[in-house]
Image 1 (cartoon, helix red, strand yellow):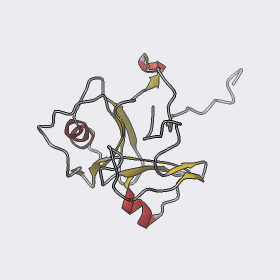
Image 2: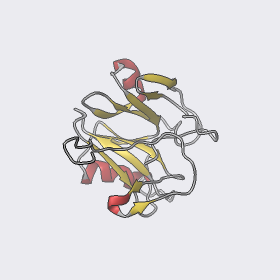
Image 3: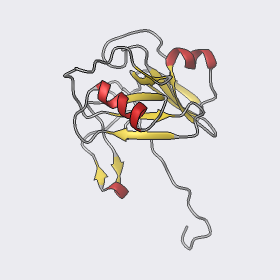
Length: 175
């Protein structure tokens, strides 16, 4: 699925690491749009963990990330919904994001099937999935390619994406 905000030329808006190399720097200041609605965060994939981390904490802790993508806003921070989310909001969109445990031993990717508010989306991660950290990836361009779920949302080129791959069984004929 798409994994964060990007410019019209598909360059990432904020922190982006690919195989340990920094492609784009961390952005810590407020700005326009959802990305700039602080606190925002970084999805960090390390050797044995995957964590959604609030941006200033990420800057302080400087975790070892092999891959990272910055987006925003954070949906859930330490078990609390983002302070600007309103239960009676009328802003609805198809939204996608990722939630993680604090230890980084579980990451759950979610895309809405119908338009939802930020409050509803964040509440899903916190209340239904029990995840204390969650990061919003996008809303306007939310796309998922998961053939095993009979879903392939194509339409246009995207910026940062995240995928989960299964190891190839080398003992299998033809593998």
